[in-house]
Image 1 (cartoon, rainbow, N blue to C red):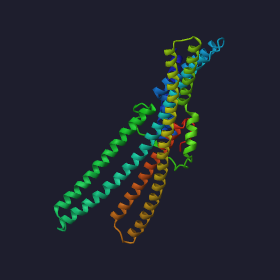
Image 2 (image 1 turned 45 degrees about the vertical axis):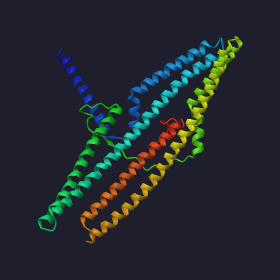
Image 3 (image 1 turned 180 degrees about the horizontal axis):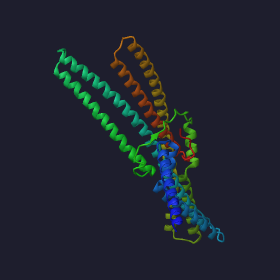
Image 4 (image 1 turned 120 degrees about the vertical axis):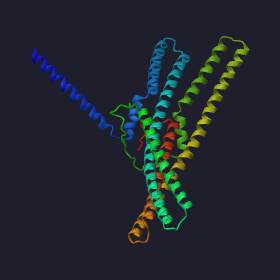
Length: 361
């Protein structure tokens, strides 16, 4: 009996050790995260996507049942009705998934930009403090008045307030980001993990005409319109055969016209959306290139000022100002990268591409 109790105790200890090892591994995995992992977590845990997935599976089942029931009759009308239900479910699922991916990419990059903003604000506080101390010393020596000191003090405190706000915004955004990924705020997971920086992308090249043609080819909305047109035409044919009243026939003819107009409207809106988004995408590329050039210039200026400080030609505050300009240029580039990726993904979504298969880096 004693031996059994000892064995049970041993097994219990082993289970406890395994449990804590698992917790430790999970915590270590959360210390760093890349964009691919973030997208995977969001897709795995998002309730709206789970609902859309089940609705798509049910639509697939209904489609197969409808197809089997229609084997004897061979009705094109019943076949089209089955197609409509499945296409709508596919459209809803794809739309839901793509929106989740875009939102995760957006928030991921926004957090990187927000972190960069904190570093920028910290340097700003450091410079304002130095200037405040300098003015204070000059006031004590009688070289400057109290009004200038008050103004410099206000600038210093404003800079500290902006830093505090930047920190608060960052932590709040991180909480929301973890919620989107399905990460619970337990003690083990309360810490903020490190987000891996994304490399400068190889610019995705596509012309507007190709984007429009691919969008038309992949559009489920247009396919739905085509099915509606065909259903309306079959309805009219049936009514003609059944010798329906003229008013009923006229209404069915109007339905065909309406279905065709819906198709034309959908096609026109798709062309317009692609045109607008293509313009946004091209502008994001221009902004990205400009930000990269500005960063290069800021680095050169910083290097020159560093040498001038060493030679005694510039002050430490001059160098600090150059560091802030460099950080601002890096922040602007990160912001441009954010805009580029979102503009690209939005265009690809409008083109009907599966964003889960799109390379994001």
